[in-house]
Amino acid sequence: MMKNVLHISLFAILLVATAFGQKEFGKITLPLGRVQVQKGGSGNFNKATMRMIIHEKDIVKTLARSRCEITLVSGGKLRIGENSELEITKAEVKPMEKSFGANLKTGDVWVAAKAVFGEKKNVSIRTPTAVAAIRGTKYRAKASEDESSVLVYDGKVDVNA
Image (cartoon, rainbow, N blue to C red; front, side):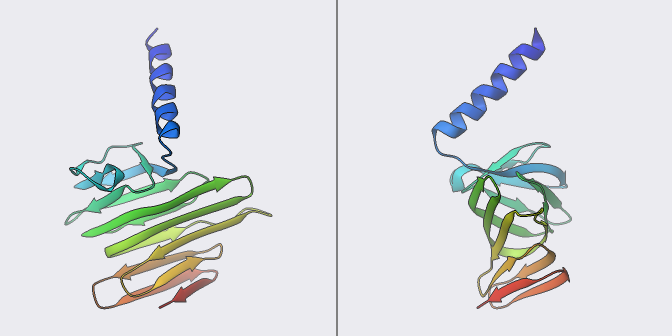
């Protein structure tokens, strides 16, 4: 009986999120330390929990000695370092085409999102001074108010000022 109630509740949450146009970005798979989420980009920041669904317009913030990993809807990972703030701006998942976007206001983020055969996948991270967009790769972006850096581990990253 409890499983049926849980399934109905999850279905209701999914239905409500879809009805209000919230597009799912991913799910928190590893909140370490003090990680907070502001739903819809307004209101209070609340404690992030394991398997919390992250949508467009949500803001994820990590405090000192804290980190967070988000598994993207279509696979791939995004890891947010300590003292970082990441605003989710885009989550469009269509068959064979996935597009994700976020603004890294401060701090650093690591992205690994390889596209499978024939699939188009774009994960772009905007910082105050640059935009980094993957082309099936792994990279790290760091942002502060006056400078940004992008470290490429594997593959190709387009960076624009």
